[in-house]
Length: 351
Ligand code: PEP
Ligand code: MN
Image (cartoon, rainbow, N blue to C red; front, side, top):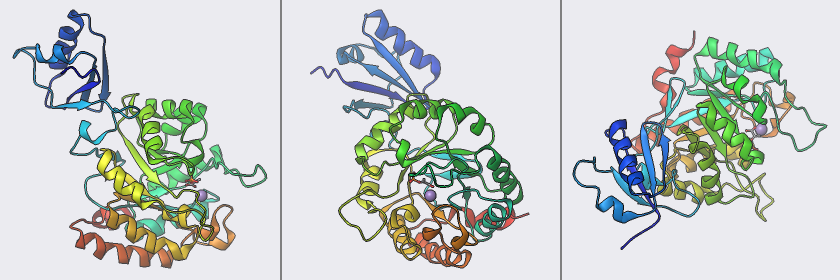
């Protein structure tokens, strides 16, 4: 029976010439065909399945034949059942290891940024976070050091070897940020800023896409499609808590979404227990739960002096608390047959 909504997936084992031959075959019959690229994987959208069956042995067999889902095509697990690995500087997210990215909510000063980065590297973080442009609820709050903060992030990277991720809030900023940092973060408030998603997709850089706190897990997958459509498969989904009727924590961490994403998408999944819990005491239990449920990575707020922080100090871990957390994560990872990503090479990264 004809299924008009089919994707033909060709992984890296199929040459570009083989994919081109398929396009020629489909177009010679007048069937409209779209080609998408996901890293080394090519995906053809086919409207007439009979043409696939009539292709003959001269054409390479597709690696997968996938039914097109309504809103989410390229991000579906079936397109790449082995999962996507995201290269964030020297760190790989999605290879089974447990990746911890640590750092301040906002880059505030040289002293604060460099000291926090050193703490992260010392205790086995595999990446540094730090916002230079901060999307704040109130315009009266600290908006970040903006372009002046960027050099501090690169200096921290030089000193520790940790790749850096920072939030981008404006499509016009993407190129300039992408020239410097190792990964871009799209924040919860911008998850459906489609111009920003497209620009970030075009950068080719890894993108941490945070779930909007009023968006469903499927809407997050649909937002990720904007990045994937640009040929950028270096996308990490981040659950950072949603707004519910429960007022006891800043947000409610939706671990069900993490489990569902692990089943429904090939993209790696990150959890932010700092912004969801909003309190240092919640970071450890939420982190352990996130890894147990299958998250590939955690992103954690750490600050050398949280009481002086200009942004989100109430949820930041002290260096000692971060060290304790890493100590608790390692045996959990081992029990799950996983290892801590930064721990193997963390010591050698500190200059
Ligand atoms: C952040 O990571 O500092 C941040 C603003 O997060 P979110 O977009 O999840 O609120
Ligand atoms: Mn924050």
